[in-house]
Structure formats: structure tokens, C-alpha cells
Length: 388
Ligand code: SF4
Ligand code: SF4
Image 1: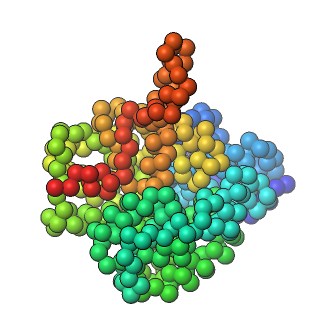
Image 2: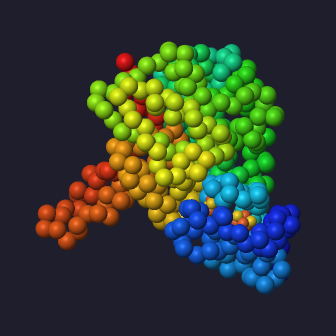
Image 3: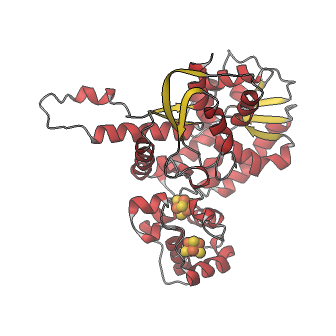
């Protein structure tokens, strides 16, 4: 019988779910909504976990897929009395401990060891000469791998608005969320001590990041040991707007919508601030999607799903884009490098799906030029383009 030593810690919770079977977790579970199999919902996962624990179910590749495909988006947890995401993270850890891992995630973990980031990119790419770093600053600007390696503009704008910052550049460590959420907990613990050591050497009293995932990891996994307060940049931006230090105006009337990243909204409690910032912009109307705030819908990339099951992740992001399109907004704003990338992909995939490939004037070269019907923007980059 397969050993589920980590999942077993939640035996009582699992049996409680199996007895009640209330099902409040099923509708709007993004993975269930694409797979349309109950085993991919929270209720189904707990039933499968119990089956394995009692020897009634053996671990097949399908079981590994349902364990590893949970986004840990927390939508089910919001509707349930159980700590669903903790149970499912432990379920993933059990898979990893038995060597039942995904080769793409294994690859990303190998990259973390070799390059210090999951994307096999040279750490030197994190160096940003435009950011004047002060090692004695009380504010540490934590770029995160995605912005630090691939979107310097956003970090430069953040640094300009924050003023005096310390930026570690190529010395900056990864927050290691991928290890944590994909169940590589042993490896996470090893990396955690390295991160704590680097951050403790700084003089920071606050760590400001634009990445909601780094924000959550710093807050929940590192803050106690580093004695500095993690802050998402939106909080800083909100303070500046509230004090009247920043004013924005759109030349034309615009309708925009806001996507709450799971780690920022549901887990981070930052829901009103981005909306207040958007509402402060003259000539702009904020419209809400069907699922927003605490009920927001994951972009599809949580827990490395875009690496392990990309087709599933893109189907989920297409659902989110369709919600955005239904508002009739022309701009979809968010502040998360992963959501920005995934939603953009979802938008272009929808546009490609709608191409008439049999049309006489169809040209394969045109596929590269296909754009999402709704433009996806990072909130700060959009605001910079409107600055008065
Ligand atoms: S809402 Fe919670 S208790 Fe109810 S079926 Fe879903 S996971 Fe089980
Ligand atoms: S955390 Fe998200 S993806 Fe996982 S079971 Fe719950 S709702 Fe579904």
C-alpha cells in the first residue's frame, strides 16, 4: 500500500469531507471546470486520497496528474471549513517523495539549483544599471525572478517611485515558491536557509515586491526569520495616490477591468487598493468580472501548472479572458508577472481559435501577429503611460 505520510496528517479533515460531501468546492474550481471530472475537484481529491490511504486505490499516472494539477488557488478553501490547500500541498509532497514527479517541474527544480531561478537564465540578467542601489537603505526592492530577469521596465518604474532602495541584482535569491507549491518541500527547506541568510545581511526594515507570489512567500515563509516587513508594491502606490502625490488621466474614456491574482487578493487580502487606484484615474470606468475579489478565478498558472500541464493552464486562462471580454472592457489590468504572461497567452489563444484556417487569404505568417481582443497590462505600466 502506498504511503501517504504527509496527507495522513489530515485524516480527520479528509473523513469529514467524505462524510459531508457538501460539494461547495466543486463549481468554479478552475481545474474541475476544464477536466469536468469530479476527481479533479477538492471533494474528489480528498476521496482519492482516502482511497489510497485505505488501500482501495493504487497510484496510477492519472492519480499523479490529479494530485499535481491542483493550482492551490484557494477558491475551494474559501468555500470550505477545511484547510484544503494545505492538504493538497501535502498530497503533492507525498507524490514527490515517491519519485512521482513531473519532468518539466523536475527540470525547473534543476534550474533553481544551477541558475538560482526556474527559467534556466543567467543570474547576471538580474542586474539593472538604471536602478541606483543603496546597500544601507531600509527598503529592499525584491524583483522576483520573472520581473528581475524579463521585465526590467516595471522594476525601474517601481524603484523610481520608491526613491531610496537597496536592489540586490544578481545576488537576489528566488523565493522558491515553485518548490513549495509543487511539493518539493525537502528541497524548499534547504533553499530557505540560503534565502534567509542573504536577506538578513541587508539593512531592510521593509521588503517591497511587485510579485504577489514573492510577497506571499516572504510574508508567510520568511518574515519571522528576516525581521523585515514584506509589502506588495500596490500598497505603496495606493498610499501615493491617496496622498495626491500621483494623478492620472486617460485622454479618452476607457472601460477597464481588474484581475485579482490569487496570492494578492484571496491570500494577501489586497483587494480594495488596486480598485481605488484605478477609480482615481480620470475618464476611466472600472467594471468587475463575474468572479472578482475573494471569488477571483485563477489565471491558470498557479503551482507551476503552466510548466507541468500547459494545455490545462491555457484552457483555464481562456476562461478568465472570456470573463474579462464579457465586461466589454478593452483593458485587463493586473499586477503579477505570471498572471500577465498567462492571461496574454489565453487571449492570443482565443484569437487564434477564431481564425478561419480554410479562408483563402489565410497566411501562416499572420499567426505571429495575432493579438488578444483585450489588452493585458501591468497596472503600473498602464499608469505610467497615463501620468499627467
Ligand atoms: S466544500 Fe469542503 S467539505 Fe464540502 S465537499 Fe468540498 S472539500 Fe469537502
Ligand atoms: S485549490 Fe483551486 S485548483 Fe485546487 S482544488 Fe481548490 S479550487 Fe481546485
